[in-house]
Image (tube, rainbow, N blue to C red):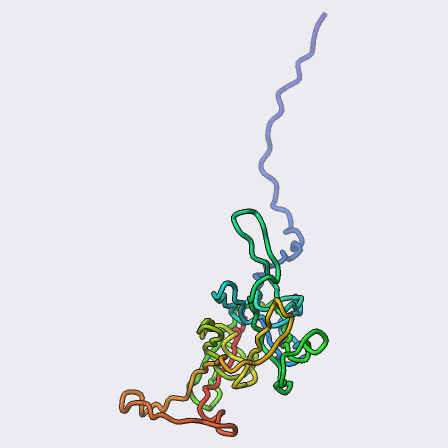
Amino acid sequence: MSHSLSAPSLSGPPGKQGPFGRPGIPAQSVRVGYTLVKHSQSEQVPLCPIGTSQLWAGYSLLFVEGQEKAHNQDLGFAGSCLPRFSTMPFIYCNINEVCHYARRNDKSYWLSTTAPIPMMPVGQTQIPQYISRCSVCEAPSQAIAVHSQDISIPQCPLGWRSLWIGYSFLMHTAAGAEGGGQSLVSPGSCLEDFRATPFIECTGARGTCHYFANKYSFWLTTVEERQQFQEEPVSETLKAGQLHTRVSRCQVCMKSL
């Protein structure tokens, strides 16, 4: 029986290059979320600056004090904006695996509003009018504070845009000289309103809030350029109506993309 053998196939030359395909779908960009906090120093929840979006609203926590030790919050960070308010927002625990709540004279401190200073400690339904509200905002780029050390508003660096202007808040102290401060690069160091008493003390065990005489606020002051190394500071006392003349101004700026 005979079998026919087929001849081996031969490869031809490469064909012509075909047309280009259609452009692909644009890829989604990776968004890096930066956070900043806006404090209203009022009962109203502040709006986030243009170009940013709100993540949550809350109450402006400045610092807490437990066992006579203070723990500070940077007002530019999201941790300073608690979604719920309590005169005692923490518990304390020991090595016996026992935790206690509102059993000691621990305290919390909050940015306050412009409500008139009360004669006596306030409690329960009276407290909200004294506690500043805040918003945590997501921003497309980093925000910083710039300070003029002058009564004039400083300019944002080239390539940055303004979010808000304010006054240069530096530090605070309370009971037992405990307290904290703000990093001067943080948006939390630039408060929109100047107050000689910008925060209120709340006592956890009693559930009340009040302004006490042993609370102090510290602000950057104005410095004349020609006097930087020329003479020692001259002591002076400023009273109502004069305070703004010696407090540094600031501006919070965000890098333009």
